[in-house]
Amino acid sequence: MSTTDPAEARFLAIEDSGWGRTFTFYQPRNLAFWVYALLTGSGALLFFDRIGSTYHAYSRAILVTALVFAVYGAIFWWFTQHIDRYARQPIKLLATAFLWGGFAATWSMAAYANDALISIYGKLFGHAWAQDWGAGLAAPFTEETAKGFGLLLLIALAPRLVRTAFDGFILGAFLGLGFEIIEDISYGMNSGAARFGADQVEAALSTVILRVATGTAGHILYTALFCVGLVYLLGRPAEPRRVGRGLLLIAVPMLLHGLWDSMANFAGESNIAVLGFIVGITVVALVVAVRVFALTVPRERRFLAEILAPEVAAGFVTSEESAAACGNAKARRAFRRAGRDRAERGRHGYVLEAVCDLADALATDRGAETPRVAFARAEVSRLRDGRPVTEALLPVRL
Image (cartoon, rainbow, N blue to C red; front, side, top):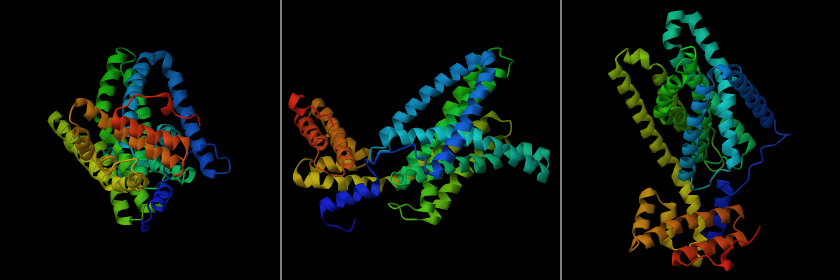
């Protein structure tokens, strides 16, 4: 920010980040809404028709798979909310991303595109070649593009919310999570049917365990990286366009995806080679994701610092609290450990959460002096001093 006025800098940070804005899903005058509704709705119908037609025969496999991946999805949802401590996206927007990845990208788009592209490969290079290499040279293009198209629709539906590469990272992860969970439920159902329904729970669980163990470094990370690259390629009001970086971050997850789907061609029938391949791709994907997270998050931290700066100047938040809230995990951990005893260290952790809640309140109310902001400030002070909740501090109904 070029301005030196903390209040003006706060206003610009709120505007640039989109922090605190709400999301309206139903937009009948927006073509993107109808495209989203048509493809997601048709994909959901195809998926549930498939489930309904086989449920009576493989109900146990379907239920076990769905239950496990529901827990898996809930854990990932919690983790993503934990790392997204800055301009947090509305729950409705995250759910919209999840549903696109789960139903539109899978059943309405990639399922047809994969078969079509592999068929083209067979006509060009022969059936045997297409059987060996078709999946590895089809899915990275069709599936990542289908999920990435979801981000384009989200930008069209919520242009004031999708502002930075970090937003692309978070929304891409939810697009990938939806894709992975619905795809894995289908795999679990297919495993239950592999033995004509005999031992279907055991067969489904073997697939589920493998998919859970390798899932985090699969569609979730691939799409998070792809969508960061897409944001850099397009540019956003709060994120300057960087074509080279964008193309690289689009290419890397597609390459990792292709290597994963071509694993059998590289590793052969050796279990050790297959395990090494799995570990290698997983480690590379996680390392790249950590680096990309570190690349994209500083802009979010700067927005948070500018929102809190007037609070620091007015004495409502200390400079140490602001630095810890805007810092990395190491800075927050150091702040919590600075307490003299266990009780004070615990209080420091609560204070950091309250400071982030204050930033949320300020962003939601566009920096205005409101009862919500006053309550959030009072909570920071109360938790810092270790005072109990009193009636005077209870939030005003808004």
